[in-house]
Image (cartoon, rainbow, N blue to C red):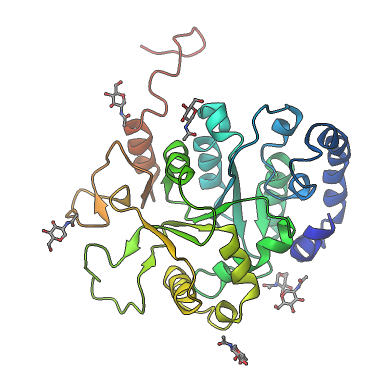
Length: 323
Ligand SMILES: *[C@@H]1O[C@H](CO)[C@@H](O)[C@H](O)[C@H]1NC(C)=O
Ligand SMILES: *[C@@H]1O[C@H](CO)[C@@H](O)[C@H](O)[C@H]1NC(C)=O
Ligand SMILES: *[C@@H]1O[C@H](CO)[C@@H](O)[C@H](O)[C@H]1NC(C)=O
Ligand SMILES: *[C@@H]1O[C@H](CO)[C@@H](O)[C@H](O)[C@H]1NC(C)=O
Ligand SMILES: *[C@@H]1O[C@H](CO)[C@@H](O)[C@H](O)[C@H]1NC(C)=O
Ligand SMILES: *[C@@H]1O[C@H](CO)[C@@H](O)[C@H](O)[C@H]1NC(C)=O
């Protein structure tokens, strides 16, 4: 718990009792944890804010995963509905257990919560899902939230790394977790910078781009780069600016991210009816790893249907009227 306090302090200062309440079940879990996991994982993982699969700690796993991934979705306190949808689409019950349960944790990242109504609503989510990280920052996109997040991770999770990769992503991006894992499996575990690179196909789209970077729809960093961001003077001196471009620039200045993977065309933007396809935007394809710009629920429905996420999974039943 000590590890979390600095970050959680401002948020919980008015809500102290809920923090203590949350720690009660942890005591019981802790006992089980020592029995099953003594040598495998660190204590921090139980107390991490991203333990949304706490029940799985109660089940012994026969094979330790060869790598672990944290999917961190940048969100704001007030986007409850989108978090609800994302918890569903990334729910472990939707994926073959071997592939996802051991490998992936999901968390939502927001800055300081100031609105009383939001504090209560988000407290409910933390009590039920415990998958939220509240950072010490004022909500923003390009004024340092990304720096704040990565530089806080080593403190939140402890020095002994729990994750091999951290995915930073938007709440309008859909990741096919099985495809992502399959793609990461044979990659190095360090100095990895992975995403959809801009400029793509030689086109800079008339933006001034100091150095090629992975676009903010979602990118993957290996844990050593997360620690580098926390420790180096380079990122902390350059926190302001388009967050994805700045990250590419930090790595360039620090001569980091040598294991660089551009995943065009399997990471891309959803193509709207009136949009021409290009190197970062096209129609849905079966080999997709991530698709972005799912702003409306209608687009989510289109995408989930295309990837057969629900198709054929609901058995005919007298409980569900279906003409
Ligand atoms: C939050 O960040 C500010 C500015 O960086 C710092 O002065 C303050 O101590 C931090 N608060 C906590 C609780 O960590
Ligand atoms: C967080 O919110 C509290 C209450 O509104 C405010 O006093 C504090 O300055 C905020 N901190 C940041 C980093 O925005
Ligand atoms: C998922 O699990 C199946 C069965 O265990 C295995 O064949 C496949 O390689 C796994 N895929 C990934 C991405 O881990
Ligand atoms: C970062 O900023 C500090 C204070 O302005 C300066 O002393 C230091 O040289 C800078 N480091 C880098 C790597 O830019
Ligand atoms: C890449 O650029 C070439 C030449 O400019 C063009 O013919 C091709 O269609 C582009 N590919 C994509 C995927 O945009
Ligand atoms: C979805 O299921 C249909 C029918 O089984 C199949 O033809 C199609 O290839 C599947 N789509 C994907 C993206 O796997």
